[in-house]
Amino acid sequence: MKPMKRGDQVWQTGEVVRRYLEGVRGGIPLAAEQFEIVLRLVRAARPMVGRFLDLGCGDGALGRVLAAAYPAAEGVLLDFSEPMLEAAREALAVGGRHRFVRADYGDRGWVDAVRDGAPFDVVVSGYSIHHQPDARKREIYGEILGLLEPGGLFLNLEHVASRSGWGEAVYDEYFTDSLYAHHVRQGGVKSRSEIAEAYVHRADKEANILAPVEDQCAWLRELGYERVDCFFKTFELALFGGCRGG
Image (cartoon, rainbow, N blue to C red; front, side):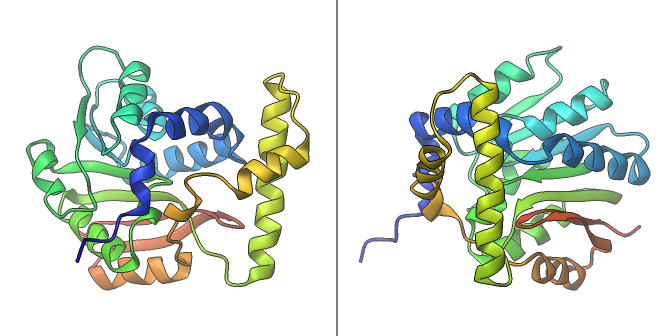
């Protein structure tokens, strides 16, 4: 029997990556506020950051935020998509302090690809881990814990599941409105209905395996994380995480 094809493989396609970076990335609601909260939490947990890991880095958005706040820090940015890593390299091509690793954290061996940079003061992930089955999500959280410095912080800025179809529908309307506003700002001429149609039928939709944020926070506590909380949530957009004890 052939192994089941993983839905997240679509993110290795240059065209899907291009459409996301050009048409979606800038349209994520409250992105600036999310980044501000990430930095506030990092500063509270680790006033000095020497090493950080951006897991499933995409175009390096979170890595850029940390690199700007901590210019002397050394970052490791990991993704399994070469088009995404190329975008991250272009965005962080400064001083040679940062390392870009192509590896698939869907496979347990990914830890070996970053172990020489560990332990990390901070591990962040942005809108990425939700592509993994729930059992694998939980395993990844455990693997991240083993890569953190004592007192180190893990933050996951993530697409999470609504608890009802009603909440999901409201979120979809909210996200579509934000995408349309982004499209207009870019000088686009598509109607809102065209933007909505593209959003509903987007190529990467089937790659999403969403879990409620409450469940994921419970997993972190069970694994031994401390100070676990959901620090931001708007519909299906959430920032949650915790610290390694010590």
